[in-house]
Length: 342
Image (cartoon, rainbow, N blue to C red; front, side, top):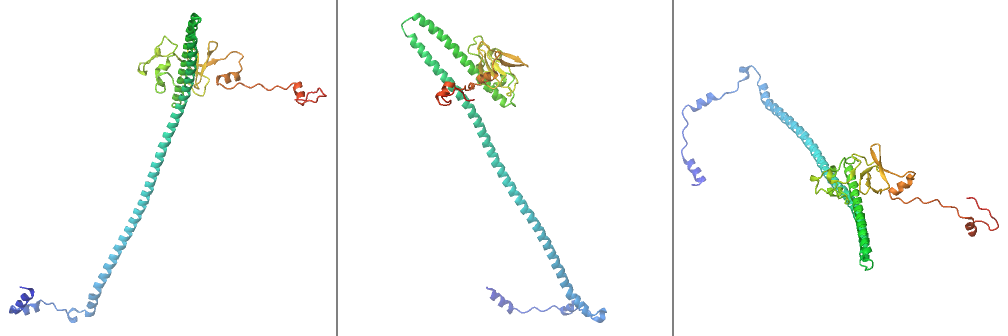
């Protein structure tokens, strides 16, 4: 059945009868308004109150809602400003962090370049030493070839053999002296590198330079047959060194102080890393607990300094030309013998 058929069917049903006494009961339950004579108040005030009380309540409620909304809006505005300030601070912190990371990367790159530059300087010094050694080896090879060519000559075999034996001994001694000088140069370089890392103070002993010296074998002079080189620093002792360490805990500000000395060849290494060959006629002297090269009596200090550091000799002062030369070039008239003042 559809809705319309159901509705039609219900309308056709007879209406139920109302219960008995329903009208009287409803009339008793209805509360009629009191008249003015019964309450003693005019009915106009009651009517006004009934009209304005709901309006007043609505106004008060509206004002309260508006106040709450205004308070909420103000609070939200303050929170928004605080969030905006926090966002700006966060952006500043992020930019500062990015700048710090960039500066840190640049500092690391600069430190790497500085280390590379120091390593390059060290390698250049080593290359210079190796070139000098290669030149010396080439010269020794040429001399050996000359000696071999002379040894192959049939005349005077006995004299040639003696000459070759003497030449070999001299060449061996010279090569040992050159190797000793090279050892002292490496010792001086290692001491200066150690001083660079320790406030310009030279090392106190040999063992402290184990990181700067490549091997303890360079501490034994090639001409020292009484000592053997230590294979490593773990087995190193005083019996494995030929050189004298004369300036422990010294300073690089005194380059003329002797740092190390070879007692066999009388070669000395100064505190500035340079090496001097003193030979048999020169020695070292001690002054105020430090060792210096003893210079011959009456030597010119300027000449000694130029020889020590390989500077060119001082040129002599030019002499005045002779009278004949001046007359030849027309500096003096031919009819006079007077020499112009200098």
